[in-house]
Length: 366
Image 1 (cartoon, rainbow, N blue to C red):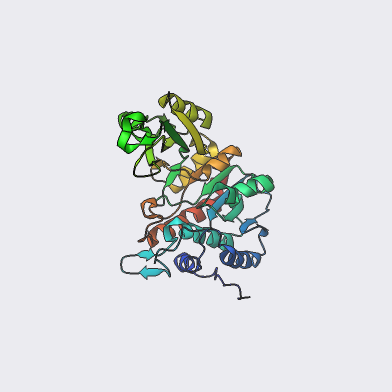
Image 2 (cartoon, one colour; image 1 turned 120 degrees about the vertical axis):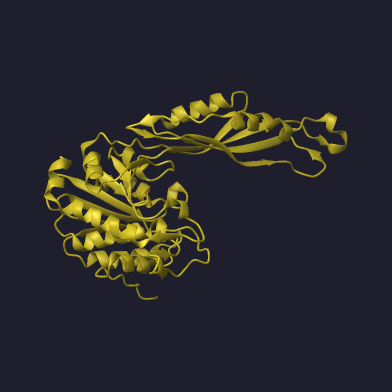
């Protein structure tokens, strides 16, 4: 059995990011990094630590009048010839798998956990497994089911990459299969059958004519999207196909529920059979909540909507207002040239440290 890798919490946050990146942690392979994080956190006397699977929860218990959750996932997408990390000091850019999504954010969490012993809010730090794959493996989801009390809070920050600015809420996602049916025949006598692939033309025509809805919620403009993301049909080169399936992804604004999103899609594809294959709710930005407003005021800058789906939606289900706030441009997440500007890692650390230690923020939070 190999020894546990060490994480040096006394290092600066950029060096700490490199340490985390260089522990390969592709989804379902998080044990090594979880062991290292657990060892580092358990050495901090001001925190109580709980482990569930490869998810770590570290909490202060100072009797403050409010509690916040700061969370990030430990796993990455598969390696793409982008490990180990590489620091371009002149450009101020750290390259490597997970630098953007989201080891930079994880490093900020660990640095704050180690060095802010008496925050003005009680803090729950969560570093969890399985975010990049199917929901059944998601450590935050599993924690919400097994130990929901560990996620109770007045406010939550998910350190997904957001260019070190606040991205509020998130859009929901619905994936369906739209099926057309026909009748098989030999292609030499095609008039004896009905071509299901040709029948899919109407599905594609409707999608091409779709006009996106762009609702404004809490002053933020979201942008829905309805797109074909796959198509399958045909069984042989000489057979008229009797079935064709178009896979469609609907990214819906957070003012729609999952049921409302499905009702829209069913109406849009009226006359066709559809099968739901995946669904997740969006999250309202909640900027009218005092906790969210106080955080936005503390970190400054413009607030933008989150068009992609993130785990802030899980906090919304638990009744906890949440925002995305982390280093890295999400455009570079999952890419071969994934990278993060070191200035953004430093900015997130500094802003969160100030928010967690300023007595004025404690009063505004209430």
